[in-house]
Length: 408
Image (cartoon, rainbow, N blue to C red):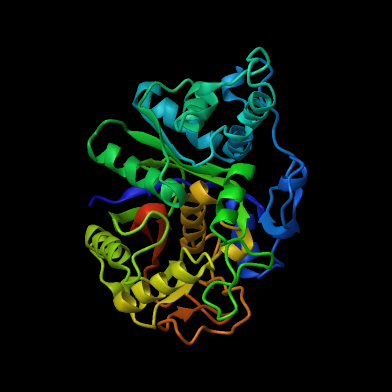
């Protein structure tokens, strides 16, 4: 495929804000910001255990005073704060292409669901009285974050949302590439956003995959997921909009059609997505210098993913799960991890070519196929920096993005 430029990403997570801060924190292996909390249960007077969560502690930018209620959600406020980092490039795109040729595609799994939980509680307490139930349907649309961006910047191009659980953010980038290839737009604001929600935390709790200790991917002692929140947004285009040095070289997507919540144990769909991405990027496995793994710390994901990586790359390609730093940000994860990959490729942010060390207890699970998890001595070892980011979701939904530095 024709490589597409990715602007310097806007990023916000429990680790902090800004791509430079994320790269520095990961390379210095700062303490994980994930904290043990039961506040989502206490806030609703529910019984629940404390779990490790990745909470954004930044004071978020206030909404414009006259913003309609349909746009007022924590998801959109996180997105609004994050977009401050991208506004210069957005203005360049508007000037260069016009508002009608800029599309918006944002992935999310929660949109405005938390804002309407009080409505459900009211209806349960007053089954025959709807006078106090003010359900805002537009807050719930999968397209709500994308609609918000288009509204705020007056964009008139294609606008829609992607909601494929934990691949949503990565799928948004794939969709953006397809829109550009089809010449339906000249630039796409694309990425993902998700925030902590009682619904999603309880949902993962019902699957018995939450951990009350820091997530420990690929360890024999791994106990499960830490849910996080955050956002990452790019502008993708055929032309440079800033001094970006990174392009989307290729991508792959597949569906296992195996189980509603578990991946195919032999990684059939994940392997297919990797092969498709490599073919799309026209690169061989040995040219991939680093993989930002999905790495959730669950029994089934880590087994499938290590098998997938070992099958295609053997145990030579350095790879890392960055979720011990950010938590699993669900619909934002694919975009956040693509942004981290972008930052590690960029030679201005990472001149020495260091790779983030795997944050874990170093107790490898002997039942998992061997993969080359990074340590403090890991570096890019190829002359040209090309890396992959993998994301896997419910329903066997698999995505792989391949990013690389530009030749110009």
